[in-house]
Length: 274
Image 1 (cartoon, rainbow, N blue to C red):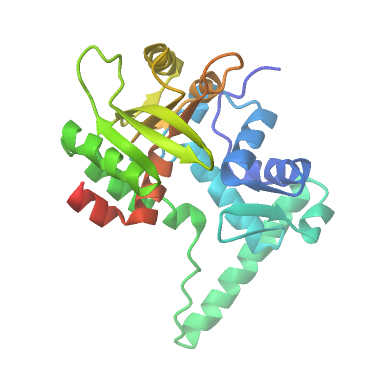
Image 2: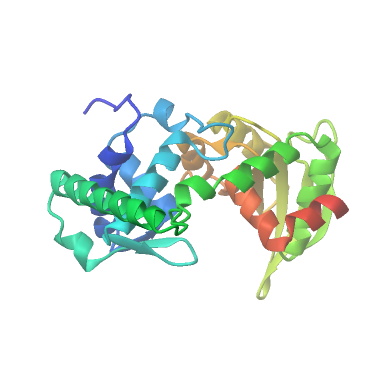
C-alpha cells in the first residue's frame, strides 16, 4: 500500500480513531491511539514530522486531538483526567465514516442554534475548552523559554528535574569527548539500582535515529540505562531505534513530556532555582 503523503483532515481521522480505540481493547493513551491511527492510515513519516505552529505538537497530533474532541461531543468517546481515552457504547454502535460525519454535523448545527439562543438572552455561552485548543498553548510558551536559556542552565534544569523524580548522585558532565553524555545519575527501584547516563538537547525540530544510535554507542560499558531529553520531538524511526530488540533500550522524553514533568514539579520553581 502506498504511503499517505497528505495530511489527513480532522473529519478523515474520526472514524479511524473510533476503530483504533475499539481494536486497542476499548481504551488507550493519546500516544497509543495516535500511533495506531497513523499506522492504520499508513501516514508517511514526512507527514508525521510536520509541526503545528511553533510546537510542541505535530500537526497530525493536533488534528487527532480535534478529532477526539468532536467524537467526545457526540458521546462516542470519553476521557479520564489521566489522559486515557475510551470508546463508549454509543461509539461502538456507529457503523461507518459517513455516519460519524453526519452525527458530528448534527451536533455542530444544534450547538450553533443553542449558541444563538443563549446570546439572544444575554448569556455567555463560550464553547467549553478543547484538548486541541488549550493543550499546547502553555507548552509552546514554556518550550520557547527553554530554548532560549543557556545550554548549561538547561543541563542544570534537567539535573534538578531528575532529582525531583527520585534520581540520586545526579551530576552534570557535559565534557567534550563524552560522546553526547551530558550527565549521570542513579535510579533506585525497590531493591535494584540503575546507573543512568542522560543526554539533554534543546532542539526545535525532530530527533532522528542517528542521534539515538550515537548516544547508545557512547553508553557502551558505562551505564545500565540511557535517557534522552529534548525540547524537540522524536521521529517514529527514532522511537523504534530506541527500543530496538537486542540493543540497550533508551528512554525518551520529548518536549511535550518535558513540559508535563516540569509542570508536575513546578516549572517556575525549577526554572528559577535550576
